[in-house]
Length: 546
Ligand SMILES: Cc1ncc(COP(=O)(O)O)c(C=O)c1O
Image (spheres, helix red, strand yellow):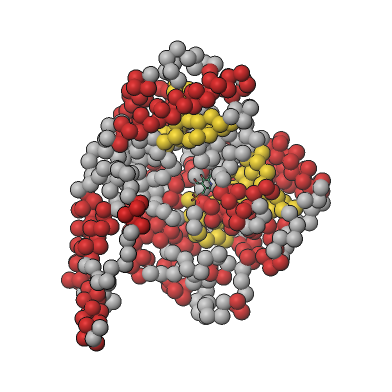
């Protein structure tokens, strides 16, 4: 390649970058390029809850991709990018009730986009400047919301709910077995959580070298909450044997059921046993509130006056949730996912620790990071696992908190909970359906559908408890799978509603998995008519499946 050739290429590629000095014409080109991409995405929209048409993905062709010899234009690449969105679900569509994935608000998208353009690295004030304040501000607002003292709190944004558990349990391990970060594990350490806790607890145990065999899953009660008496007996057993406890995880909003552990009682048990055994350390309690945290906005809501005029059933459901959520502030640390119930894009996960001094347990000394942290006052890279840290999470969380305000988030959550209650009413009232998490008060409804002639008053009890019913349980599992597949294929044609399915919402007393259909309502665009459509689509599926 001659000199002039590469110069020409560099010259032309400059147009593909945001300009470093003010150039409004080029800014217009930049914005227009994005608008064109949005226009192309808009062409993929229909009445259906997904973009374009879903189809088989050609993984073989994808593997044949190779880097081409010459550069492409912004327009060419944009078109290729838009093609990748073909078939993507629209989480904000009222007929999309799939999982705990919200549609992100416009400010939260802009919040993610702006630091992306300027490529801030949140390892330090040095590489993100004023953008770091968004992390401190989001931490202060959220700490205040859940009841941690914003003056004493510590924390940082990280790579997902799993990341928040990793930070919590890492602190817990260092408390139980000081120096482990340096020496590695020299004795087994145990983690206790409910059997309904997210599998991320086991993941973290594996990745930290604790080992998932050392995760003790305590049975849950029918409300999907940890059985605290069994927690106490397992904890006591461990302490009697002089075993170390790296952490106790209380789940504040289980993934499938919205079960809420009795954190207050968990803490009382821990404190009692610390005294009784004269422990030299206090086992760390982490509240996995990645889903339930958002209900903290009801902390200071007057349910008596009910200024937002929620229906009385909704008031009951919200009050039933806050009764447990209000205790998050008693935990030593917690995890909060804005990308689950805070209406931001992935990834926006916040790990909070009640006492910032705890972060010293995982901090690196300046001698370990000689090329960083030469100036400025805020250096989360000293204690973060990651060195490259995106600012998208904190900026979009900040944007969402600012946009919604307490009344905005209260209204969105109150709305989806009202709709979920409506769905439950109908499912409970019909002879062919059973609600499985009727005592949980969130936006998620687990249910099963049965063929004609099944007595739904007693069938689920038998599925749970009667060993002689195992064959039938398997048959109804298969039936529910077929109902799901039928609803899914109808929804993919643009009719009906996309819901999801969980292979095992819980096990029967004999250890048989029981599956369930799942409606997760989070869209601000959903209304009663979309709940009714779920019902209609169930009845249509029943007719097809038989
Ligand atoms: C209760 C709970 N904890 C932890 C996680 C893990 O979060 P992430 O998928 O963001 O890593 C999830 C994910 O759904 C969850 O529901």
